[in-house]
Image (cartoon, rainbow, N blue to C red):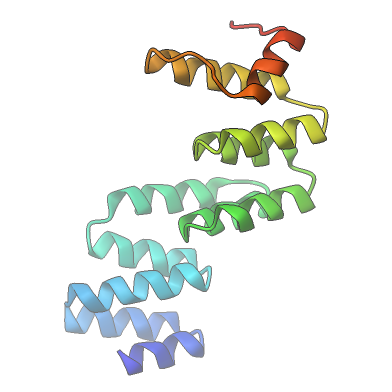
Length: 159
């Protein structure tokens, strides 16, 4: 693994891939996948995740590569690493408020999604609708005071 780290430190991704192919060891492939994802080398990360049959991560990386906006790519890479806060910050710094709200909705961080929507005076209805549908799925009623307050103030178009 020290050799692998050496290749990663010098961004010699082709050499790192050759090493993993030669060793044919899942642990080494997993290390490369994590290192490459952290370094934001999507091609290497994609191949490494594919080698260890992490199909969900391969599909997610392919999704990231298709995004036309660099800030959105960076945010999705942060999500790949499990860092929701960084993803949100990247999106907000680049004026992508809707995407920041959606990141919080997808991670069920309802209160933060509502805070962002209210602060930026946009997409409050989207947050309320997603929350309503989520609660309906589990046959629950709204109990959060913040959501109850805005439910009475914002009209929802459920179409």
